[in-house]
Image (cartoon, rainbow, N blue to C red; front, side):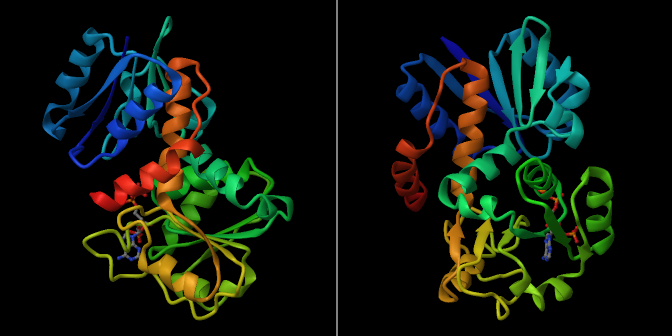
Length: 278
Ligand code: ATR
């Protein structure tokens, strides 16, 4: 009987219980996944209490992906490199921290569009927050050899590249520079919250320079098809959706906790119906 959960604030609208309960069914595993909302002022006390509860594992979401680190007994390579954790597992050595976000992104993308990896496509990342860092790191470990980063605050794009980049070509850009050179890229990834409900009529930049066949990805999954993706669709881009990443990063967390081989693809259609209904 696995005891699993999610810590964050707020966590009320999370899709994680639905995903993990379905992965338990798929893998024939018994367990419970509960939402553990922790107010920022109670973080220290509540996390210490969690240690006594013997959870087998838990996910960590906003705003605690960095704050949880001092409470852990070890980190995997990706979590150490990023300084951010989204998955914790209770092991014989204590609480181990992992980060499955970037790998979830890259593998859900690879499942749909393997050609962009074969071609080592030039990539444009929009945004420089925690999500952008995880995706940059995972793309860097794939066959992608050029990743430019555009951000509203250009200094944050410079910092991201300085902190994480190793052995690949990377330029920091303003959003305007990126907007006018979209045709240079085979893959464009939108990692900011712009376009997320209730701001669903917003778009980080115009896609006037986008060319047909480019892969355009948006990590926002509410709404499922953001304005950014709708506009990309009109220009005959190939679309990669935020919920595909969400599902795949959960599959990796589940795999870490249970040592099973969970599969995202059989759940995808049902997950899309579920997201449309909420
Ligand atoms: P997360 O960890 O979820 O990625 P974050 O660290 O707060 O969140 O980063 C949010 C990202 O969205 C940043 O790249 C931010 O740009 P700034 O670094 O300039 O703040 C970007 N962002 C948020 N609102 C934006 C907006 N209205 N227009 C453009 N970029 C925006």
